[in-house]
Image (tube, rainbow, N blue to C red; front, side):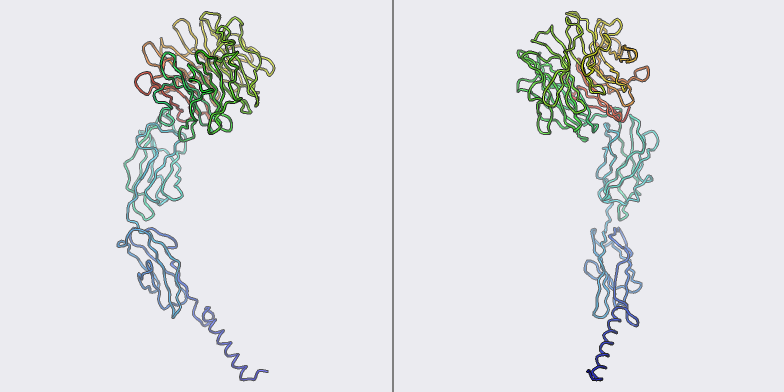
Length: 605
């Protein structure tokens, strides 16, 4: 057993140790644990002048120091506050810490970063650019600053958008995550054409409170028709573009295919294609050439876009002295691949001539309508409709020609809601100049004629170049009608209930004594037909017209008035939301050179 003296000594030591521990822990009768924190600012702070600093301390320190980049800035006394005049400090990041000491004990606070900034921010970039006259209504309005800005200073009182000569435009404000840019989005649709002006106020400030060096207010223009990309589409600069076709993908972006003619009496032509990626045009590979021969002479082409975004182009390649071939190629992301591995037709028995019309079925399989010349005999021209099954090309029924003694050419194609082809074509009566237009529909097992000739009234000739389907599925055909020197555009619609073709309004022509050429037709999201054609007068350069049928009359959508090539043709396409696109050969330089421009109506017309 432990003797009493040793027991008392052990008890005393234990009590003393407990007392010391209690004192260090701030227990009853002892000082509190030593701690120190910079409570204000509580995080990184920006300043241009003086900064108030508050330090919180517990544990009755002997001294409290505020240190700047590890150097003593000041010794603090209760209530441990300090106003730091940063005017003499260099601009940039500075680190503050607080140090508390009691006896030999010392604690250090977490650091606080103070960014000294006395430089006024500026605007580095503006989108749209000042005085830009080709701005898309959907383009974001973005202001980029030289440094992060105080978000609360960006508000309708400091950033104002207005219509020049009109009223303010209410916008939504979206600062970037790092605060260096601001995106503005108008809260409602914008009327076009219009000019907008953006003004910034010097109440806008950076994180240190420095006022923005405000630029002068700047303006930009939303034209009625916006030129996509702002540059002509042409692969070889010395060539000209006489014709173009367009199609939309499921993303609403257009793809285009066009011819580039080299000039001369019989110009070889290159087929080229490009697609819009949302920011600009991507030219898809080199020229389309099915078998490395000289390019097509006065060839024709069409384009479609599969649901996965793949671009598909069909074209014929008539070359003097050899059979004419019909090709359908698919862009695989790297190169063009011939669907079926070769031409659609057997060129040794049937040549492919005239217009080519391409569409895709619900499984993205191509269906083409093309003019055929069996044995190369011009008098035997008929219309073939050919479908890709996934493994081979097969004919859809028999060739189309209403009268075996006539010559059929220039088909245009559409698919009904069941995927059955509807085809329109021009048919010449013998060797005369009398042309008719006919339309047939495939039922799944046979071709059925939709009425007789679409040639209206006393017109002696009709040439179809556009076919679309109304929301009800009824075909709408656009054609050039001719009587002597009088050439106009006629648009006719099939009536399922009446079993007849009816004209939509009157024949179309903007200027008396002018000529019309190659009308195209489509239907917008509201079911209204839209038609595009080129028109020129005696001794005058041509122009394009885009009109829309509204209940009983046609309304001009005021397409830009610029020179179009005589005998040139463009195309139009409408997105699911009503966006309207037009691809048009366009005079870019003096002479006969035309390049391709693609326009979109600025908003929904």
